[in-house]
Length: 156
Image (cartoon, rainbow, N blue to C red):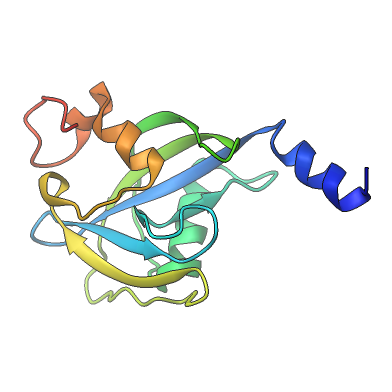
């Protein structure tokens, strides 16, 4: 087995930690983007990414949000939920989700055009499809009740 093949195989043997940022605008809509990267291509996703060694989930959420959207100045991110995401590709993630309000004057930009086509604002009850697996799992869980504008029933 080649070193590259062995490295790729090991990636599927590890559960990775992802962190997602649920960012609300003044109309209580969430920021959601159309993915271009191979992992989840063509799916709509919240900003987010991998937790790095030594980083807290809140720090990861703020870092990923800035890297992907240019948005900074997030105050008091609030825990929303956690999902257990087993992808058809064999990848397995546990995704920790935090919400925050869009800081005044902030405008999201597609800062990683090789990974993301565009950002849009949508209410949790009217997301475009298809959705990235962590969002599907969030909406189908009891954590969906933590989303603004949701009355407690499962959305999926």
